[in-house]
Length: 565
Image (cartoon, rainbow, N blue to C red; front, side, top):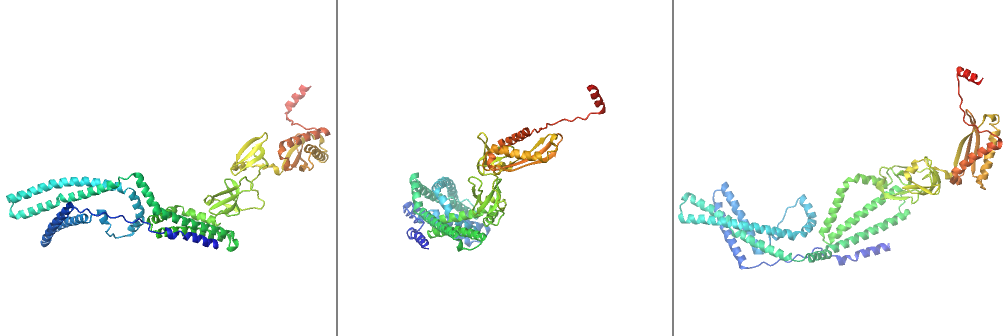
């Protein structure tokens, strides 16, 4: 409890010193240039606006036809444009600054835009100046071309007006309308309006070019300093806070896991509680990061955390079914359970523990512990362990004989392969699954010889009693002298009459040897054959050989007798 209080105190100490406004103070607004040219522009715009207002008053007094409405709308549009230009010149601000005062109605899509706006704004700021310069250069080119067009059109319109004033040849019925149209076109193609905008664009371009003259190194250094001054400090503070919270949760989890008496519940319930605890820890750390960025008023990093969380949730919809399968395994409710036997990659394993990672153990293998993601167990099946059930046919140092006749000593056996040392120090390698598929016989636990031995029919009257005792005693004596062990290596020996063959009386001899003789499997087998021959030689017994019997017809028998005579 004391340690927990100390950790909380350490966590709260740096907060008063690190709290502060995350956003830099707004830049100073440049003061407008009060020169005569700007004053002339303002007076020109004022005069033009007054003329438009008079024309609007005259149109409003006329009968509201479609044509009158169109003229009113067009004049009102020009008046609004002049008001905007007047405001720009009088205030000395740019159009972007003016737009900041406008209010927008928000809908559900706008809410999403507001969430990602800090992130997008930061990305746009990286290329804001080059894009602004390019936009101003294009705008200047268009305005210069527009001035030329307006000057050409204005000269033509003024010439037509001057001609009309000098000659006055137009009938009075059409003259008024004719002059109204010319005056309207003169206002529309007035070159002073694009000239004012051109001067504004050139001033803005000059200002941007002067600001962009800084070196790339200085700009990068300033950006890095600004980041660590504001957002970098906020990020490191929140990161340290979240790290301390996660460490506290981890230590608390280990303390609860060690104190089993604290939560006397079943293993399945305990696993469920620990899984819920982990989810709660992640949620608390995520909430702490959001609260931290909210306190520091850092909407960019806060937006990044929210966007990252939303992206994670959206992308996780594809593996949600797999997540529930893994959760069932973690809670010991799946097809694989703890303390049960499973076949994985062709080798039996004991499922020791299942959590976020599964631990498999095979005590018969070298380095027989495997730690894997719990997802690897999806689709596998386990069963209860049988008492005294072997986990592998052999152990290191055992002698083994495979189905293909391979005979050797187990040098190494791991989950990947089994190495056999054959006679003559030759090493032979088998994949673990292939080794098990070869039906290995572990003769280090004991082995048996079973052989059939035939004798001549001349001892038919002794084969069932005397001969059996003779071979039993003879084999025991000869093998005991050969093995020369204080403790007899023959675990079992039996000589029995097996069958009466076509040319011999066959004995069945069974000898069980102890496992310590496994390194002499073939020499003992040859010694047994030698012992059988010696017993026959000592007792004058005949070992028959295979005979061929022919059946002849009567004619062949007569021919054979005649030949013999």
